[in-house]
Image 1 (cartoon, rainbow, N blue to C red):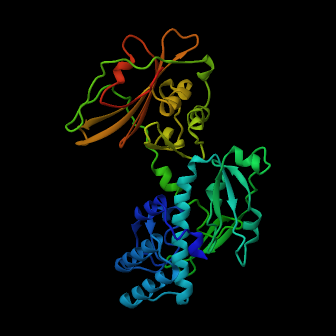
Image 2 (tube, rainbow, N blue to C red):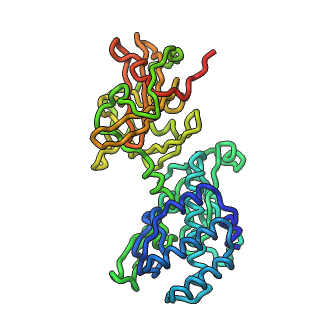
Image 3 (cartoon, rainbow, N blue to C red):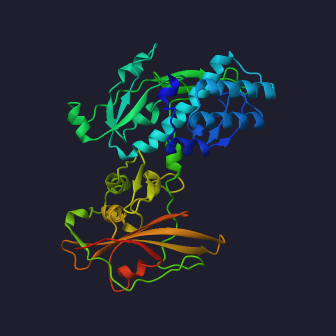
Length: 411
């Protein structure tokens, strides 16, 4: 039954998540904990690189469509080859390795896929012979994608847990007879002792009631957050230093005419950094608690979240350079740009080339004499945003350089 639950058929996000893991030898299952599993592949007690490598290959085969029985054949071969001693019986231990790796990689893939759905529903499988009462009580629960409850309760929520999550839209809530999402259940935290057999000794962890220690996190969420580009510390410089292989050009035409927007699109001055950050994140489907994957008009994807506006100490700096009131325009530039440019810039200090993608949009704001310009630029070294009313020295053409990938079609 486990084979059917985890889809015997893999999907791209699940496979990609697992393939990006690094092999790590350990003495016990508590050597790495919760979100660290987004980065490392481990088998508890497999403390030699060769054993970990062989198990990694066996698990990859399972993700690619293998069954528990085929995995057990690989398990037996690995044990015989390396003389590996393990705790527990053969059937139990092989099932734990198989199910845990398939369920968490499946969950990480689903976490990424579900970013497009505004609501998530908790699903408990009714075929479970010995269901956990709290997991049953969560069955059918519908919460917003960005609700913090998912950070600790996104399944699997324990050893052998087969709960899942499915995405819903407003029409689905209507079909379920709901006028909106449910209220998140209160979380009761309990202390649990783990690592009794660990070389470093036992320790106490705090987990939500109903969640096994080590499962109080959302698989894949740390990986998603790590994809959020940091903000470049220096103000952006128009143009580019150029570079071989990608010619940087200036356009001979003009930007599409600015779109008209009401004065209310500009936020008042004096708001908090949290309020300004939310004004950028929410139109993109993200929140201060939950990142989101944004797919632009040409199909490229970018992860956005709170981390875009955090400094090295984790403080929000969303109103940096007085850009706060323009946050709605900056989000609009990413969602519906007038043009998208890609350019190559040579970083002399780092002696490397960086490819950057730049979104340019201009808007005619009610009551303003000149158009407002919004530019969002993202590259491997981070992102930067420009928001201003255009004067004689800062026209839209200043930022139009590189190779144009897209231009908005106007009637």
